[in-house]
Length: 78
Length: 195
Image (cartoon, rainbow over all chains, first blue to last red; front, side, top):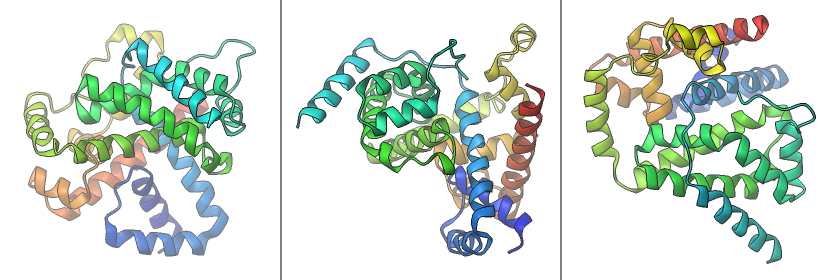
């Protein structure tokens, strides 16, 4: 796999769209390209961020944060 | 992207705080991103009560898994979105609502093939809101590419599932995803350079 092909696959990888049989080949190329590959994958996560940011924020129930923080405090005590 | 007040901690600083087990850091991260994460969950599971439950579980997982976050592998928001998306799709499948969601999806796509981008008004674009700017980048794509990406990202469908659901050859689905994602990636890069 050349680097251009790897880039195409990396964009699919970060949004979870690589088929199972493509993943092993992708991981092989990832090892081959080393840090260059890791740097590119990190950049590709801007796609996931963008898809989430493209949505209109939704209002969460006010109780969620209170329950969450209570769970966190309980976890810290344990 | 939520605007930060002067002096407010960055996302990375908050993640470091969570790694150091500071509950206040989690509270601030929650305040900053709960709306975006809930919107993402809702887009996947279409159920308000389940979305609230999952939102709480996801932020608890952020707290528990924060040690696995590495700034070298990307930004905190990308990490959180990846985690939230995976949990939402798992939730959808576990609750065996997949078939019903697919049915709803089919109805939605038949009614609004470009639902992702339909409501960006001129006024919103003028405001320069991040969401609208991103949607503008996405809206440049042909509807078939948008649909393939939407099915992969928000429905967790494999390329084969997308092909089966849209009666499209697998090779065409692969091409649509690759071209669409490249265009969005390049568009976002230009957007970052402009801002």
